[in-house]
Amino acid sequence: MAQVIKMPKMSDTMTEGVIAAWHKKVGDKVKSGDLLAEVETDKATMELESYDNGTLLHINIPEKGSVPVDGIIAIIGNPGEDFAALLSGGAAPAPKAEAKAAPAAAAPATPAVDTSKIAAQVIRMPKMSDTMTDGNIVAWHKKVGDKVKSGELLAEVETDKATMELESYETGTLLYIGVEAGNSIAVDGIIAIVGKEDADWKTLLAASQGGASTAPVAKTETTTASVATESHKTAETATVANNNTNGRIFASPLAKVIAKDKGIDLAAVPGSGENGRITKKDIENFKGAPAPAKSTEKTATPAVTFPAYVGEEKFDELPISQMRKTIVKRLSESQFTALHIYLTIEIDMDKAVEARESLNQIAPVKISFNDMVIKATAAALRKHPMANASWRGESIRVNQHIHIGVAMAVEDGLLVPVVKFADNKSLSQISAEVKDFGGKAKSKKLQPADMAGNTFTISNLGMFGIEQFTSILNTPEACIMSVGSIKQTPVVKNGQIVAGNVMKVTLACDHRVVDGAVGAAFLQTFKQLLEDPIRLLA
Image 1 (cartoon, rainbow, N blue to C red):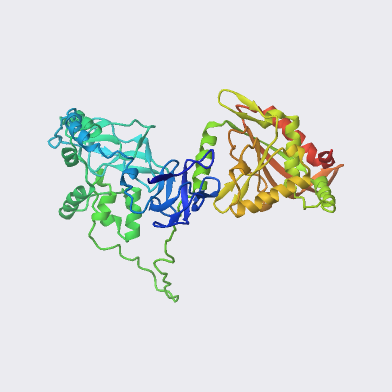
Image 2 (image 1 turned 90 degrees about the vertical axis):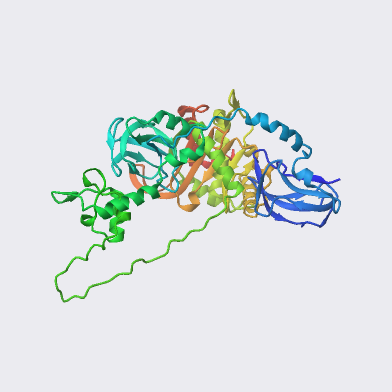
């Protein structure tokens, strides 16, 4: 009998997996324990083994495809076995019952409302940029009851990139404003209705928002193409409007940009907007000659010409890895739920530099400054346990064990392996463990167990020359420490200005758990340990 292979949950935070590679193809014999595929989770690339014997009948997800946890990825069974019912969930005999139930479901349908005879048009929020999802009405330039002409400025809209002008494409009376100034609305949401004064705009609004028939509504909605055609006919028969007052030409900012790009003289364009104001539509429909080149005085120097362009716009669309998706999801949740506060302190690293040189002469492995930071952090956490706590919703968990997460950059994002019981380990042990984690991270060999259980996290960008930065909390932890580079800086010692080695660290705290005074006390202890590193060996 055919068996469904579903995507297993390979880590506590996994919601979906990507098939990195298939090691079997349809028709291959499969034994229990055979490697079926490699699966990329939010934390690592792991092997997926078969738990059944048989033939691989069907592959439901191709390589590089993603599937949620418990989603079907393959079917194993006997050669020639029918597996169609398994893909559909085994609900084959349902169509007759559904056919009988269909009339009953259709009964409560909403009656169609014909809006084709309503002399009004719905104005919707346009998509003004490729990333825009909603717009904020900064200001209305018309109020309900005002007369509106095609091309007139209706409102100013703040998008995700700029504040832009929203022009009317209809002529009539402003009958309805759907969004007050200062409020936002999604792209394609109804922001206004323009039409005849006696038009039944309430019915049109209800039909546009509700379940009325869509065909009549489509007739009443604004179509830029038809309006543009009508405007073009008007522009051909009309003379140039008087849009130049005291030498000033009235035109929308977008119209000016397009005219400049096309080489069109705005003075030659008839404006269809209020008081002859030139709109984007007027520029697009203008059929006159481009603006004549300005005459220049004769000079001995020949004219210099430049190419119309100097490059080509290119880009690559990169698929989002599972690791990147998880980073975005978890850090977004942390950024907007935890109450972040930041505390920064400077540390005199002169003695730490000397101590490291001495230790590396006798240590079995090379000790880094980051290893010393991890050891000092663990010792400071033992003295300040609230910095080693976590937020649990209905309670605060104060951890008695000290597990330090060490953030490591990899090609696809960021991994945080954990040095467990760091306060009980020597500098050499910590150094060896961190180096081992670094190798596994680069080769994607870290396992979920290597990255679980951290109670405090350290992120160090000092090796990249970054002097100071802040990190987003790795919830539910209450603290994460950002470590900068060691920089030679003029300092005052014994009344003299001398060169000193200074390092800045910034502690991000969840204010729900750690108050500023608690975080400051932890940093003071951490500073004292690094400024007198012999205490780390005690």
